[in-house]
Image (cartoon, rainbow, N blue to C red; front, side, top):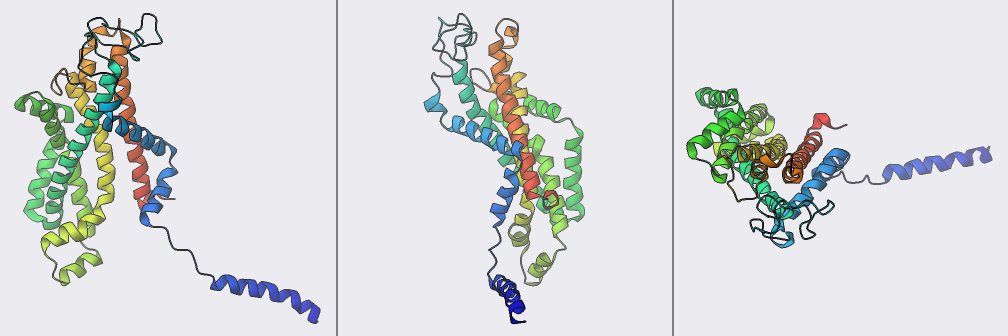
Length: 311
């Protein structure tokens, strides 16, 4: 009997030792978000592309081979280096006035990223303030703000941007302001909806009982819990801003020549579609890749930050 009882003691001791072993600390929210984000290969690829674009934008002054507005009168419409008749100094060729396309594309990345970031910061800050006021105070304040946003959303975004730029005058600064106004309703509605869903939660009620003021309640207690959807919207808003700025530049209402903005480059190259394809193809590809990268990253952030999307 003693021989039969001896083997059974080992599993009991093993289970007892496992029971007293300390469990590992739970991952931090940032680490958990990154773990979910990197599972999305499209979002990870978009993040890598955006990192490359940001690197080009930040180092454009040093890595661009030529001045983006300098003209070489001996090299008009030179093709890329892999084509016959190319000039080896200009890797992607030159435009109709002899400017290096590669240098203009690199500096255009700097302009496009600046446009996207400025527009998102301006529209997000304004939208958060209006949305917080509408969702927190409710009543006639909410009705007035939200009906104004509904009117703005009823108008096509590009048409409204064109109208604003037509009033203010063509130019890069006015175009960015117009795009920020067009994107404003999205942040207002998103912030207001998040605030309304947070108002009846226990931590808000406890803060009210403790005597927290309106400003502290809105921007210290409630706002941090509303930032996840706003971050996603801001990421997607950068791509929309870049696309709208390119559209305004293409129509001659955004950045004005000789600024190397991608939409303006497309506008200047329209007449060479059939004879010099590289002049219009490379700026279009830059817009396509950049907008796609931000959209992919935004989708990945949405899945990583939304608890309902986590599996």
